Image (cartoon, rainbow, N blue to C red; front, side, top):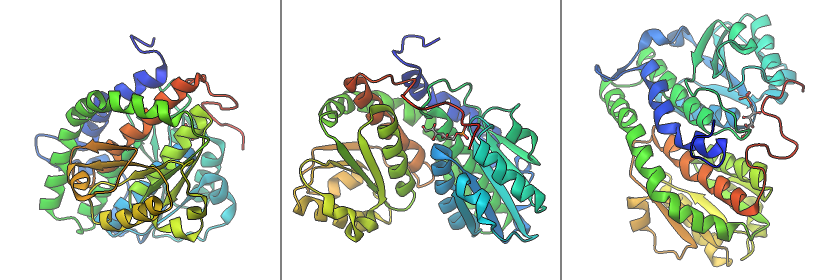
Length: 365
Ligand code: F6R
């Protein structure tokens, strides 16, 4: 049932405040203001490396998780798409654990990667949405995303719930390894607790602007997404979402890679969507935007109030979000990215919930 929404995808986008809150409450003690240590059955304190793998959108969630595990828990992460991971013959040692991410819990390549790690004796954790799935069954520890059934083929609410679980796990690992101060933990928990209400406000406030922008975007054949740090996986996700439902060719790049090739493509016919909260990468990303502007490229900037105030560049649109803690940013910035893809596809008249050639669950390699 789509309720009063036109598509399941739209319904699922608007469900995010509720399902993210529900998911977070599984891992965070809101009253205490701390993460629930016993919600992790992985001995993070004694690991020297974490292997991670997934496909598509779940892989991009994992990429954000890598930044978080390394930054907050000082735990090195090896991550790869599952179709590569399963054949890489990565050397595994006793002090590693493996973490897989899957909405359906049935993705063939992810399952094969899991079995490779299990056969090599690693403890297996899985972030899954479907709790009675094969991947959940074959894991030692399951970390549920409480997103509810996701019907739209393009993943939305499962992605933000995966990010929520990974944020909590990185904090749990940080506490276990003594690398995250109680003060930082409390600050991040407070930010996460307030996030769902903020998401509600943002979804309402940005919608008209994104509709106008999407009408313009639907005229283009190519779009480039850029981001740095945890905004880099968001750029990859933005490009994936746009291409899979609107069929507009889109690519996501680390902003710093611009001058290593893609800058050759910049002209007035390829809008560049820049994801840039005012974080410690902001200045660098601004200089990449200047390179784009100097070559006649049109910029769509997704930033916060501070970022908007700090740039004087002319843009095709600037989407301004509230300033948030860095652990909330990727979850918050997923919202405009999803809405841009959604509304552009609606203008193009494509089958949003059932895009051509795609299946919800990829059970063959
Ligand atoms: C993109 C999308 C896919 C899935 C991928 C993994 O919108 O939905 O890229 O994320 O096929 O699927 P799961 O998470 O079920 O393993």
